[in-house]
Image (cartoon, rainbow, N blue to C red; front, side):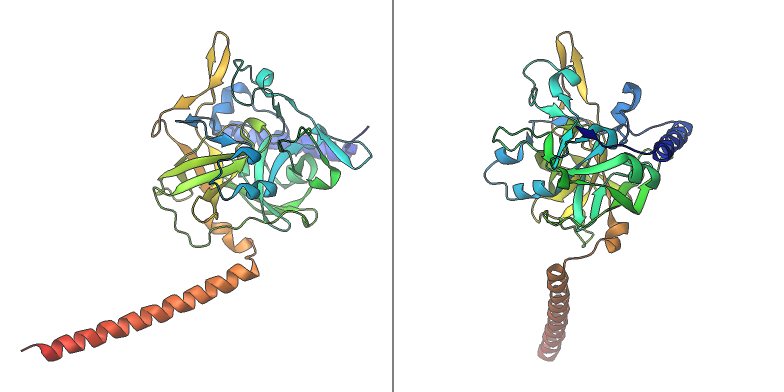
Length: 356
């Protein structure tokens, strides 16, 4: 089997890039867990979002509740893998390096998804034919993006007995560059996103749409799709915005874990992307017979931080149909407002004329 390889020069670039990013993070006193290219030390893993609020709302795409309308969005989600964790077999297939979830995380027997595979480092979402949205801390810089990271579609439990760790080689994409990147290491809760340009357009997965209205309100219902604990794709339903006031992020209740970083977070009513998962609570609770998922009551803990993407909206092409609808909506609203103002003026005049 042919393993994906790098030249000596490429390997040197990756090592220099990783060391530079690590040195920068350590000098700032905090490292986001799980950048692609290596697992973070246990002492810093709690920086990533890892917790269950109330009931466990993680579902495989083929097992979501019947009233959930957006299960097909899972087809447009990617998992970020280290280049060395992908093998090409020469027959058009890619084998992803994984490990059993239960043993990898030392879980108590019976935990959900115990026997599923876990692999990769972060999540992302296709937002244009050649653009993937993810978290900034998942990709240290452009050198790392180009030389160390691969973006994989289809790491999913399909319910048909197939191995989720084997995907068509055509579903593996490289990074051609960073269209945008912010990861504010000096701020514990600063901006954290990356917009990655892929090496080629994606022909068989539909880009997901983003919210261009800029209205992020407390109480908005949410869902997210990604790879919590680096498991095959999971849809997480029944989320909620707690606090929308911070400038660069909002706080939500969502069941999120290491590996959820970079997952798109959607408005549950419109299906539009509001931001990306970046950081949050502690992951697991240790017991004598193994670890279990950290469960908090609804409203408990600090919540999960979701990076806002309002300052990169203009970099993501708007679908033509959406642009037309939006322009017509603006015109109709403007016309309605003008007519409403005329009515108000006329009503005022009638009232004035009727005054004794």
